[in-house]
Image (tube, rainbow, N blue to C red):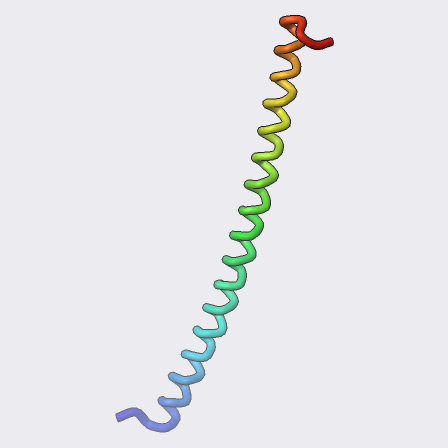
Length: 65
C-alpha cells in the first residue's frame, strides 16, 4: 500500500501532466486555426492567379483589351 507521501507525489505528478496536456491541447487548437486561416488565404491567392491568367488569355485571343 502507498504511503500518504507517495499518494501526494502521485497526485502532484498527475496534476502536472494534466496541466501540460491542457496547454498542449490549447496550442494544438491555435495551430489548427492558423492552418485553416492560411489555407483560406492560399485558396484566395490561387483564385486571383487563375483570374489573371484567364484575363491574359482573353487578351491574347482579342476578346478584351
